[in-house]
Amino acid sequence: MKVLIINGSPAGENSITLQTALFIEKHFSQDSFDVIHAAQKIRSYQKDFSGCAEKLKEADLLLFCYPVYTFLAPAQLHQFISLIKENNIDLSGRYAAQITTSKHFYDVTAHTWLQQMCTDMQLRFIGGLSADMEDLLAEKGQQDALSFWNYVHFAAEKGIVKEITAVQKKELYAASPCAPLTQKSLRRVVIVADLADDTDGLLLSMIRRLQNRMNANTEVADISTFPFQGGCLGCFRCAASGKCFYTDGFADWLRSTIQTADAVVYAYTIKDHSMGMQFKLFDDRQFCNGHRTVMMGKPVGYLVSGNLSQEENLKVLMHARAQVGGNYPAGIACNETQPDKAIDDLADVLDYALKENLQQPADFYGVGGMKIFRDLIYQMQGMMREDHRFYKRHGFYDFPQKHKGRIMAMYLVGAMMSSQKLQNKAAGKMTEGMIMPYKMIIDKAGKKR
Ligand SMILES: Cc1cc2nc3c(=O)[nH]c(=O)nc-3n(C[C@H](O)[C@H](O)[C@H](O)COP(=O)(O)O)c2cc1C
Image (cartoon, rainbow, N blue to C red; front, side, top):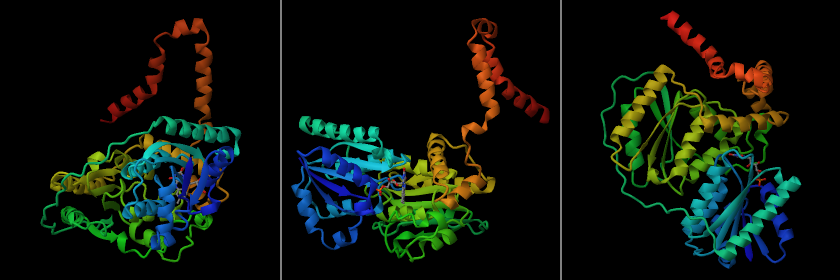
């Protein structure tokens, strides 16, 4: 099988993910492997795609190898796949598979996204390997990589592929104008938008309505006009100091314009099953902020132009981002149907959330995500110093061993339960015991009233 590795890591040859593919190559001499360093050389491929086009057409299987970057793939890989689409390279019928390395923080959304992109390119998608960045260093990880490749062979021989339904484009609507409120509160809401992709002006109509409706000072930060020097390189130079290697002023702009807002609304047109390439660049470059949830407690909303009802992965991503960021999810207004009511609702909920300082406990997406970060930052505290300080300050290190009293109590219960005699005695009393502290809270609450 002729395999073309699409290396989506900005680290190029030094990519950790690429090592898994190279390891597989060593064990499968019957396959021939070639590599395109898609992310690292994106600038030159944007100028001339002909060499890549030839390689793509010759391959039997495209193997996308990339690190998970902020819930998805690096912006540079996104750009490379867009080039394949723009150049109308016919890849229909060829096989595709993916290998990622990460800390498993939202590797699922990244994998689904890549699969969706493969479906757009009419590739026959076999499956993926989601490895921890250290997996290949242990025998189990090496075995997993080889088993994965054996499966790729098996599936290709049998023609077993994973199907995703393609998105059907449906009509979208503009929002109607509405009169602005004459008096506004002092609160400041930033609408982070990508207006370059808003070729039909629908997104702008939604933004204008939200701005007029809100009882807050709103301003639009159009990321399509920000002079980004490039995508995040994953160089980790920012890890200790919080300072990015680029000199385009993004980190300062982020901190002074967006992170100082009382609430943020993200406004975008759906493209490539995502918020678009420019937003991906924007998200990746926020790595200069490490894993610090500096906007926690602030409400977040979304204005979306596009067929969101068919983009489950994108919905999960928006929800999960708010959850992990510790933001109150004020809502999503989309223009698949006339959006006026949804925009007004979003504006009203944002105003209400700001006024009442509305908070919600995190769900699985938030709690699970933060546990991964907690363990990661604790281990990497020597290097990720800013993150470590932040996590200590905010009590994010909630390791189980700190609940010593509860652990001891559970040993006691466990010992009691192992005795049949005591079990018979306590029959039915277990739930009564568990509910006791709650009852005390209810009793106290009653007394207050
Ligand atoms: C900008 C940036 C964003 C990242 N986002 C994620 C993420 O969302 N989830 C995750 O588990 N790891 C994330 N990581 C960690 C990388 O996925 C991990 O370090 C990967 O193994 C790097 O592979 P590479 O050497 O092939 O580039 C991120 C790293 C960087 C630099």
